[in-house]
Amino acid sequence: MRSIRSFLLRMEPAGFVSRHTSLAALVFICSLFASGHLAVARIGVDYQMQLGNPSQATSDPSNHTNYLIQRAQYAMDYNDTTRQANWVSWSYTSSDSGSSGRQDTYRADTNLPTGFTRIGSATFGGGLDRGHMCPSADRTATVADNDATFFMSNMIPQTSQNNQGLWATFETYCRSLASGGSEVLIICGPGDFGTTTISNGMKLPGSVWKVVVVAPAGTATAPSKVNTACRVIAIHTPNTTTVGSSWTSYLTTVEQIEANTGFRFFSSLPTSVARYLRKVKDTGSGPNTPTVISAVSPISGTAGSTVTISGYNFGTTPVVKFNGVTASASVTGGGTQITATVPTSATTGTISVTSSSNGSDTSAETFTVTSPPSLTLSKTSLGGFSTTAGTASVSQSYTMTGTGLTANVVVTAPAGYEVSVDNVAFAGTLTLVPVNGNLTAVIYVRLSTAAQVGTRTLAITDTGGGANGQSVAVSGTVSPAQTPYQSWGSGYGLSGTSAEAGADPDGDGWSNAQEYAFGLNPTNSGGSLASLTQTTNQVKITFLQRDTGGITYAVKAAATLAGGFTNNITPQLSADTNGVPAGYKKYEATLSTTNGRGFLKVEATVP
Picture (cartoon, rainbow, N blue to C red):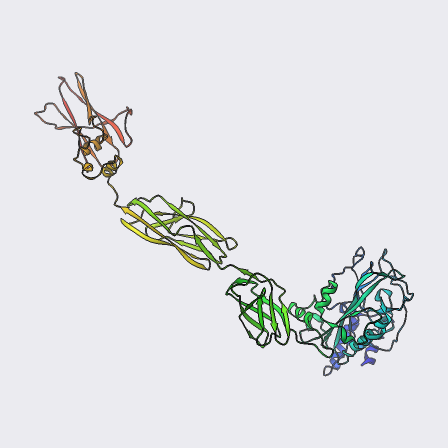
């Protein structure tokens, strides 16, 4: 297989790596060896940062602490303050190991921008090696590949005991992981810097860490093929002369390295996969199976509501806690899904799941415990409504307050009543729209014009929004509609027998009916129903006539009393409005005479 790869590479000038030619080679080789595992060299800028950019480094030359360098052999985040890489990332397959040998071409990285310190090739001394981040042995397929690993930007001041001991052993072990055709994705870097600086200005790291992901073979990149079944190895080793010889003594989790460095690994992977892999702590021969929460849905709810927790390795009887309060829970999906009930006393916070055999995990999300939807009313009853049939009563009001509402609230008035939010426009129902689950409204209530005669004790219902319904008892009386005469009498306080049409409560000789018809006060004696004036050739009668009430007025004339009132005279509206009470108008009628004699009278028929 190596001879085929060499043949293809010889189609380009020495030292030149064509991405397009590599892709063509992949297609050709896969077609020949589809039945077996194929290790394909992943040389090219696109392949060296497949797990993401842990520090969001950029290629901006003014960025002296997180300057991104991307080479065909590896990518790095260079720090001009510590004068070494923050991290170096690369892909390794067995085809990356070849016959080029070790070049030992240590040299300053002249590709660093102007203004950056370029560390020279001199040895560090003091028991410190020029420690490779991307190892020379990971890039021996071509001279150009190996030569690229000797830029001093790829070196850190590493104790000989670390670099030539467990670190070299671990590098060899990582290469062995690719022997079955796997692709090994690696990120490593220095950490725990103190104040010590070596003679060339480089800061001395207190530790060295490495993250390794063993991905399946194939041409796909990490986001498409890395999954929770992939092995993840993370080590964090002290950069000291007393460091142990076994890398397995320094196994940790990616999550812990994130906490130590401030970096965020696996940003290119699906969220659920990244969350899981960050939790894995390798055993030295394979991964463990940690309890991992990958998702919580919903991320808010009331006490007693149901929450689904998705993830990995929950076991059969995990302990689930909402911000420290234990919840009832059941497991399905072979330990990948939990259905939990929010405890009554739970408060807002994270959710934790603890498995008896796989450890525990805490949700990345904060679960918000919300109050259940509720409606409260300022009053539970309104009474004393009173009106006559056909007339709306005076309104009364109560205040409605809603919290945590999930839908609109409907206020429904019972028959004969109506409601309003502005005391102007009334209707049988109101629909109130909460804002962010909250609602405050003043509800006005009154007897409607359609209310039937009688006493009406009913209830207004306030329902919806997911809250328990509330009600307001209302009671009122609707009296029969008064005739205009009855209304007139009520206006003067007449009641009982004194309100009867033939009664004369003020004792002035005029009945209520007469005083009603001609605009007199039934409680104040005196006054006349009409006035009469006479001259030598005419007689004029003046009287008040009611505007409403259906009273019929007639003016009649007679030449002699013996002859009777046989002639009708049409009265005319008077221009004189002085002293005319509300609801009346002044009229007058004139009878012309030839001998100075004549008689006029006015009659009123009250219905």
